[in-house]
Image (cartoon, rainbow, N blue to C red; front, side):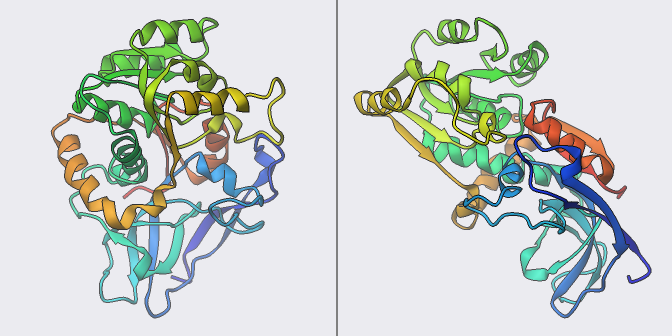
Length: 342
């Protein structure tokens, strides 16, 4: 192992507003050998996710910030190259938190063994992993959609939103997506089966969204915030449910948005319409719920009832550019970096 080389991308500086290429640095160094109870992994795929932007800041949050000069964190799928733990052997396919690097050495207790015959290993980072579980938990445990209700999904073509809408359809709801651009909207309706999709970039976005939900909104799955939520708020029905998964519109902001104070309107709407708005962090729910999620999602994916699109970027060196684009909505589907051929 010591003869092997491994590349990694470290946080060079904390972004001021939107990240730029200079906030990242590509380094190369020798791979290390595992100690007792550890496993050495060659990472095949790296997941890029919006939450990573928050961890690039040192502001207080639900997770520890990434450290300057250290490899950025992230979920990976990889192959075991060497193991000093009896539960793993060379060649095993594993889900890990291997980070933005080609090789990782991790405690065996932090790994999850994946089926050897998994035809799309990267799906463990998407529809059968954290994004799929996030969609399922937020919709089913907080949104609680009922047959005949109207569900609206922000970022509907993305890794989480695309799954939310399809599951809502399976549960008998009418589903309206919100996405950035005509191509993404066509994908949401034509490929994923949403009933409608509104382009958030359309100058008449708010008016078109209102027309698409003549009976109002019973469940709004929030991934975006900003102007999208401003258009959604007056359309929420009495007893609407709003799972808050992400607020990507504000991730690069360093100060509150200018304009009138919207808090009184928000609080008044929540009160008068008895709306339930609940944020959630998916890491809180893996233990009690992940097996329940897989029991439903696994068959849906296998049977083609839930479809999933990936946006695959080749090479670790291209991860920073891809991540910067992710925060601007440039990706189309779940953003994954292919680090190595299997």
